[in-house]
Image (cartoon, rainbow, N blue to C red):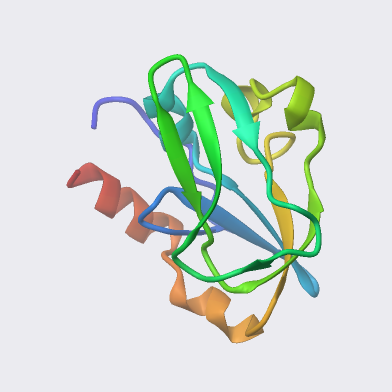
Length: 131
């Protein structure tokens, strides 16, 4: 890994390259800067429906780039309470600001303690350095 990969320490991560930010009773979810870099220019994001139930580890949408199409995986189980509609007309926000304006959805978790089962920033960096 030659470049420095942005991985904010306050976030939790998955091996499928999603990040989670706890915000009270809701969790914000997006894809990591590493994933955005690997994808290249994002041109489309399929968002889930507000109110839909996500199951940890299962696909909830798709991100399409100039290089490929990739599934998005639910980091945890819960109900979608909001989606980032700005991505419909500006999917490039995922490349430009993956941890701020490029968030994908907000989730009401079924098990608030499940956040602790995800990777820390250091664990995620160690994992991607091996891939």
